[in-house]
Length: 68
Image (cartoon, rainbow, N blue to C red; front, side, top):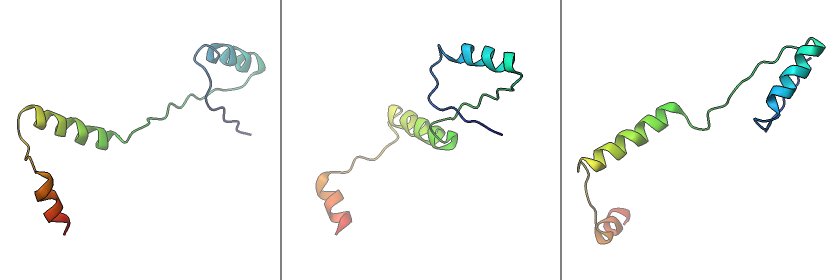
């Protein structure tokens, strides 16, 4: 049987590990990444390009014309 615990506080995790060990359970810790690493890479690269001045500035009028 598998049991999944979500939103466990860091301070409580060692106690849960001790309890599981004393009862003969195995704990598998899986930390979920909130963002796709490829997406993060793209955003960081875009921010770097902006800092380096590699961007195009578009006025509101131009943007409005693009949508029409």
